Image (cartoon, rainbow, N blue to C red):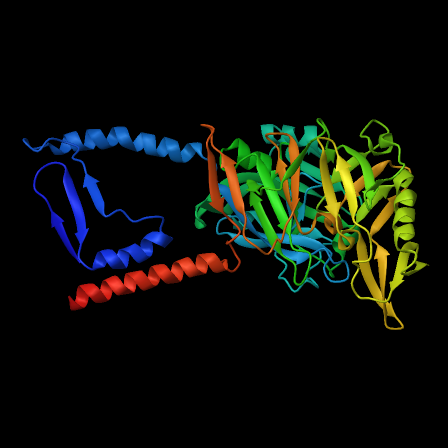
Amino acid sequence: MRAYFLAGNPVKLIITGTAVAILLQAAFVLSGFPTTLTLERAFPTNHLVELNQLRVRDSFRHPRILQQQSSVASVVNFQVQGTYDPYRVGLYYTKLHLGSPPKQYYVQIDTGSDVLWVSCSSCNGCPKSSGLQIPIQFYDPSASSTASLISCSDQRCLLGTQSSDSSCSGSNNQCSYTFQYGDGSGTSGYYVSDLINLETVVGNSVTSNASASIVFGCSTSQTGDLTKSDRAVDGIFGFGQQGLSVIAQLSSQGISPNAFSHCLVGNGAGGGILVLGQIIEPNMVYTPLIASQPHYNINLLSISVNGQTLSIDPSMFATSSSRGGTIIDSGTTLAYLTEEAYDPFVDAITQSVSQSVQPLVSKGSQCYIVASSSPEIFPTVSLNFAGSASMLLRPQDYLLQQNSVAGASVWCIGFQKTRGQGITILGDLVLKDKIIVYDLGGQRIGWANYDCSMSVNVSTMSSGGRSEYVNAGQIGSSNSLQDECKKMIFMVVVLQLFVFFVFS
């Protein structure tokens, strides 16, 4: 390839010769490669420019560049491991890097609580090994050069006391907490501030590293299931809305958008996608969040089985002073229906398949003996929410396969009955194989059925109102076939150009 520079101003770079034919091969992949590049001069050619003038010009440009960069919150990507299957793992978890030097911690993804906490070196009752085949790491504030304790006079402690089970001891001026979870387990400890190291996506799957100072819990005591080693992790990553949640802290610092999304793989080895940002999908539907609630409450209006709406009073799903409403909770493995809705739901499923299966009750759950290993004979269920947003459930989104009986498969309804609480909880059994978007800025939750092993597009809104799109699904997983083909074609073009230069 030969390049000719024409005298005068502006300067043009014209590409000629047989290399044009080669570059035309790349134009199809690279959305058109320009054959003429016009280079405009910043200063006239009839006088020399002093170095200080160039510095002054650059000094005006650099703040604009920095302002543009800082105004756009980055998408933050987390690797997801685990599966909803209660007979294998029964939870989804991710890796965090905390402290200086950073150390790695595995924490459960939990949208039903607010605070991130990890087990501390002084923890009483904390498991020291895990049946999940992951290393257990204990956080030690004294081993991190960037760690500091949160005092009672710290404004961040006030956030904790207002929005969570936090307290302040006057004896040691240390901000502490005690959390109790729905399964009866609990943890207590104190708050620390330290760096969290993040993998941010700046566009086209290009990643960079960032860090931010956050407040999280240092657990010194654990009870209940948290003490068991079969599914032990290093802590819990609360994705709630309150002020001490990591999503709220990073958003307030302008590091990430005020939204997060997950897409949990429901089969095989599990895993999935977890990002701070909004996953974009054409089939997404949204329903409003109910304001001023400690959890992600949404307004369930009715349930349909095979297109037929069940006779359930909508007030049974309402969020009120006496009823817990309907909650999205990734920290719950199964799903739970308020008792007024449970029996009509189970009866409708049974009536739909009664001619093809043998119903039975096993350990308090409604089950069915099915000749086929596939649950496709079961009906489709629709959960209908405010805003005309329906969540379609396949049979595997409300059924669990049990051990076989005489060569036949046993499928049981995975929804459990809640008594006297007026609460419906949609856990991982329902949430898997779906994109779930928590748009906190817009106070809404969206979803779409999706193959979570595939890549996704993620959007974040800048302070200037622009949408920034990146492809985050490629992170930590194999690239799509289309992207691989593009890379291969591009490498072939580069190789052809290299050979042409050498032998021409």
